[in-house]
Length: 424
Ligand code: PMP
Image (cartoon, rainbow, N blue to C red):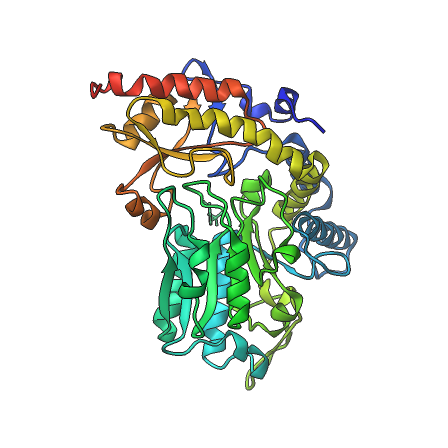
């Protein structure tokens, strides 16, 4: 299927004026807009089926549970995860940040001896190593850094090249016999660069380390097959893949989830609970889904996954390549520097840029006055900004609904910024 401008009709939010200009939304890396199919599914759920899942004998609870589990299977299908209905390898969380904290906390619990013998493979001790990259979002860096503080493990990192690419071919040096966990981004939310994960996964598995992949910025833009990529865990959020906020996913290889101890405790994850002995916990994914679940959000996420699969992820990637090429023309403007690869090869359309002499907040406000939404700041990734000698940047990012007219509007606006602020 060829994706053309008609797709915008499915996103009524885009059809509005901002400060007297047609809205140009170039902030999908922060959160994507939602197609009518997703909005309608959430509304329909509340109109017809709303109930808690996995408990209750009534019809609405049964319908809600079926819809929730069906949504899980659709999300699994989008990323090539397996299972009977397709979802046993997918844990529902509140988002990518929650998924990564879940994992790091579980590894910490295993390090305290929780989860018994089966969980020993996740345990860290002083002197063990955890490897991240300089390009990590704080949601990867901080949970695993805290895990190191709690266990005495040492945090190491992959360096980046001058275009911000993770130096994956240094894997043999960075990952050592002491490495237990490698947690890296598949696509940076600043540089847009796609990490060449193959040498990283190969080396990590050679030394028996687990690979955790942050796929927040790849799932909405690229065909993803987590089995083919051979990663052990992965995390992402629904709201960046055209689904609702408040829901995200932890993928784990089935046998790993089976051995992983829980991270949060409460209702719906326990088999037997006592006052005088430890509880026994359910099998995954329920073991990791304590409390009332985000049912409506999850149903919306399942519809978003189906919607993306109907478009075809190859088509999505192809469509966004043309828009990315348009955004990269920013680098041709006087005083504008792209922080990341300067050609569309091995990158997505998340393009961070610096306008020499103008603070990103000023750039953001200037383009907003023309109806253009971009993101400014450090984008929750300070180390990668330091790599480029900056504290903050501007970031334009694509979604399926963007057009060449959008990138032209941004280019036109940014070309006037330095003159407006009298630095050119
Ligand atoms: N990793 C990356 C690469 C991201 O872009 C984001 C969201 N900005 C996250 C992790 C965290 O996602 P969330 O805020 O939805 O939990």
